[in-house]
Image 1 (spheres, rainbow over the protein chains, first blue to last red):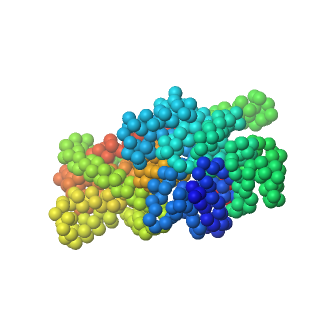
Image 2: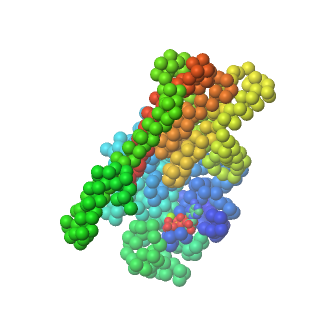
Image 3: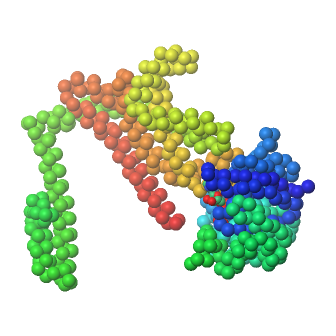
Length: 261
Length: 302
Ligand SMILES: Nc1ncnc2c1ncn2[C@@H]1O[C@H](COP(=O)(O)OP(=O)(O)OP(=O)(O)O)[C@@H](O)[C@H]1O
Ligand SMILES: [Mg+2]
């Protein structure tokens, strides 16, 4: 059985239809990258997966359980799926250690000692143990994102959602975050990523989904998708992104805008 | 025109400024000398306006104080009467302070609760949101004295089991809480809305409940933005405690009412003014300082 099943999900903000019938399954240990132009709905899709956004119609099932069914507890299901955003993830008024231990202490009701132990283990894993008592504003963007990933892992999620976690970073520190993600992928973490890093997607993804105006218009193995896409819209998007270079994403702008400059 | 005004306001500096201006226009603004003269002139003009208007204000106040055989001064600034009545007025002022402190605790609790209910997410909470919004709108829209009158004279008549036994003092606390919690809720909600959405989302995604994410993540961060506006409302609250005079509680204002009849003088009111200013001016300074510090920090952190 697929870990995550998304069935014909629709979502609008007022008149703006953002998701127009998305269906996709993600198997355990699978890494799926969502690519597509800015505003196509990647972030919205990821947020609906762990119930941070409601949906208008369709179904989202995690391990076979509909997250919006009457008898399911969104808070509990959410714990199975961690999410890391593009930026502003960490709580600026808490130390790194408190950032990581907050949820284990308040939600899992671990004692402080137990929670610290867990945090220290994760800090070693993301190689930032020496920053455990720092505050987020004293860390580089890349370090902040690695801490955010460690914090998500502290709840022992079965799946991670990563929404352009390197988009706000300087090019020279993107690598350290991508390396960590690749490591998690190789350890078998189930992941869904929204990304503009085509090279990275090719390396780490088992499958790439191209999202266009709220629909998945094409999906397939990375090599096939990136070198020989079937859909003209995919081809057009890729040629634009690749033309601007691998770091076109850096700013929030539409690749179209950047290409036009 | 400005030069004329300066001459009228403050003759000597105005004259010098005017001569500077004349020299500047003679030299022409394309010469360095001319520009320097002009700058000097404008500096002197500002100075002249400052000094001149100060003299006018001081003069005007002096006129009021001295007019009609110094009637106002004798009425309000009889030092002997102020000294004689200040102890009892200060004693009454303790009631104002106590009302302020006790009401403040309830207001903060109610304000936080209202703000939380008002920004409760999801469709099931729609009625609660609507209700708290209506509450906030109504109590922000009513004069506080009306709320006090309604609660003290109205609520008492209901003879409700819990409320019937309490004193007017507690009715006033209820009224002030009803009124000011509406403002406080607005400030708190505003502060929480200013925190980036991903903070609450990150907290929720980690499994924290809505209330936990507010308590541990959003509100502590919003605190810094809320302090100055909250303090400003509390200064208003401190002043509004004097409204209890209308229902007959013996606060500083009511004691001044009594004393002013006894002494046949308005000077007891000056004692009340002194009492309030001793509290409100430092609070105002603190609020301004907090606001300035917040602005500076926000600029510094980009
Ligand atoms: N909270 C919201 N309220 C209203 N509209 C929203 C909201 N979030 C997203 N949208 C709209 O939904 C559409 C899709 O946004 P989304 O952030 O999902 O796109 P995206 O594919 O992640 O783009 P990007 O690559 O720029 O991150 C956009 O038109 C956006 O304006
Ligand atoms: Mg996005």
